[in-house]
Picture 1 (cartoon, rainbow, N blue to C red):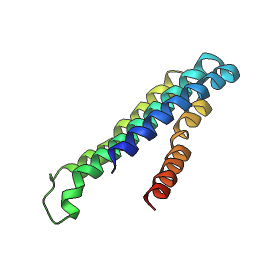
Picture 2: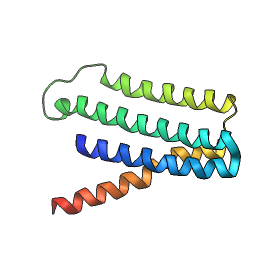
Picture 3: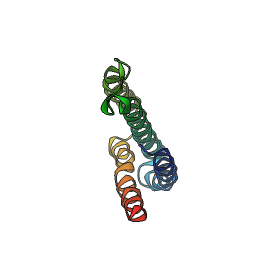
Picture 4: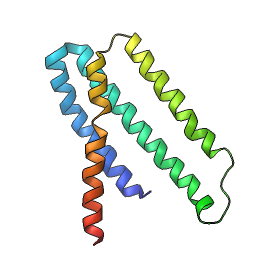
Length: 121
């Protein structure tokens, strides 16, 4: 995966999540603001972890050899991220705000992907 795309998407998502956290704070107070920020950080961390895994798997698909544990590392991602979500919900963060933070990344990734595809034409 293009490192420049990963960096641009991550920066944009974190910037927008700060604005969304301000809105979450107005609606649900501190648990809302922290929930949006935590969800966005988890989402960006997951995205970067997937990009790292795709980079590690690339030699395998090119006919080369990849480290045999790269699949295990990507599977471990679910355990770590879902565990974090459970801990944050048990700590009292607003669940809707946490879900809103998790949803910040998807439209940003789509928009940056479209922009990169247009630039490639």
